[in-house]
Amino acid sequence: MSRTAVEYFERPEAPDTHFVDNRIYTGEDIFREEQEKIFSRVWKFVCHESEISNVNDYRTTIVAETPLIVCRGPDGTIRTFVNACSHRGALVIRNPRGNARTLQCIFHRWTYDNASGECTGRPSEPGFTEMGPKIEACGLRQVKTEVYLGLVFVNLNDGAEGLKDFLSNALELEEEILGTVELEVFDYYEQVLNTNWKNWQETNMDLYHEYMHAINRRTSLGERAYYDRNWRIYPRGHAAIERYKVRYDKQKGWTERSSHLRLPGLDPSEFQLIDIFPDLAVNARGTVVRIDSQTPLSPTKTLVQYRGLAIKNVSASDRTQQMKDYAALWSPFGRNLPEDCLATELQGRAMGGGTVPYTYWTRQSAGKTHDDLAIRAYYAEWGRLMGRNPARPYNAAFPGSG
Amino acid sequence: MASKKERIEDLIATASSLLDDEKFTDWISLCAKGFEYTVTAYSEEIGHRMHWMIQDRTSLQNLIETLGAHERDGGKIRRHVGMVRVVDGGDKPRTESSVVLWHIDIHGATQLFAVGKYIDDFVFVDDHLLFERREVALDTRRLPCPSHVPL
Image: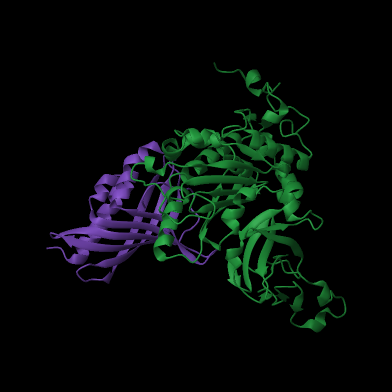
C-alpha cells in the first residue's frame, strides 16, 4: 500500500548500517568534504601503466579537482606532478596523452623537467632577480605515485600509508590476471552521468541489479553457481566477489568462449569482480578486463572512465576477438553499459531535487552474491573518513519528516 | 536511368530513413549476405582506433530481434547525412559521407549525439545495389548517452 508523507520520510526500521540518507548523494557540502577527506587522502587509480609505456610518455587527469600529469621519466619511473604552471596557474599540458622530456607551458614558455618537476627555464630571467621567486622555488608539486599490477595510483596526501597497506590484499584475486603477462588498454570511453559518483560505484557492488540486464538474465541468473559466490570484505572499504562461469551460449546467436584467448588464471567464461574504495572497479570476463574509475564533477554529475584491458602483442584475429568480447557488453553500444548508465541517471533524476529520503542496503543472503554486505562495508569506510554517519549525515532529520 | 552515384545516394538516404524510424529489419534487407558493420572511434587517450560495435548480418539480426528485451532510454536518433563522396567508383564502389546524429529524448529535447562519417562499400547482386560493409567512423568519443542501436 502507498505511504503518506509522514510515513515516507520516516526513518527506516533498520539499523543505521543498512540504509543511507540520500542527502549523501545531493549535498553540496558533502561533495566538497568528499574531495577533501576522501579523494585528497586515499590512493586513487589514475591509469594503467600501458598508457604511458614509453619513456617520456605522459597522461593527464584530475583528482580531487587537482589537475595532474602522470609521467614516465627517462629512467622509466612513473611520477606524477600537479599540472599547473607555477607562474600564473595555467595547465602546463592540455592534451590527454603525449610524449615530452620537457614540459612547457604555452603562456610564458616556462619549462619543467618530467622526472624531477623542477623548473628548468623562464624567459627574461633577470626580471625575477629583485623580487623572486627563485627558479629553484618554482618546481611543480610532486604527488605520491605507486604502481601495483600495472595499475597506477596517486595520493595527494604526502603522509599517506603505502599503497600496499591501503589495498590490504583486496586485489589478491586479480594478481594472476593482471600481473602475469603484459596487458594493454585497447579501449577507452568516458561518460558523463547526471548522478552522484557513488551511485555508479554502487552499481559495481549491487549485483542484485543484474535482473535489469537482458543478457545477464539469460547467461547468468539462471545458473545456481551465480548465486553461490561469496563476497570477500577487506579493510578500507574494498570488496571482491568470487568468480563463476557465464553461459554465453545461452544468449541467442552467441557462443561460449572456450576457444578465445584467455587471461592468465581465468577460464574464458569466468567472471571476476573487485571493488576498490572509493571509485575503482575491476571487472574481468575471461578474455578482457574493464576498469571503471571516476572524476566526480558535482554532487549530481560524474565523469566515468571505462578502460578495456587485454593481453598485448596478440595476433590480429585474437585482437579482433578481444574487441568483440569487450564490445558485446561493455562498449557504449554494448548490451549492458547503456542499461547501467540509464539506471544510475534515473537515480540522479529522482534524487537530484533532494526529496527522496533513503536508499536501502538491507539485502542479506548469507554473504553471497545478492547480499549488500559489500556496500555496507563501503559506507562504513565512507563514514569513518567523512566523520559522518551515512544514515544520519546531518543533525537535522530529512526535510519533510516532520 | 539513374547513375551509379545516384543509386548509391538513394540507398544511403533510404538506409538513414529506415534507421531513423528503427525499421531495422528493413534496413538489414538493404545489406548483402556477407555484410559487415562496425562503429569505430579513434581514442586520443590511448592512441588506438577502437571498435565499439563489430557485427555481421547474422549478429545484427540477433541484436535486432532481442532489442525489445533491453532497457532503453526511449529516445530516438535522427541522422543527417552530408554529401556523398565517391572514393572508388569501380565495380565495388566505396563512398564516404559525413554524418551528424541527433538525439531526441522522450520529452522532445534534442541534443547532438555524435558526428563522424559513414564509410560504405557496396556490391551489385543481380543488379541490386546492396551495402557490403559499413564503418561508422565517429569523431565524437564522449556520447550524451550510450545506445544499443546501429548508427
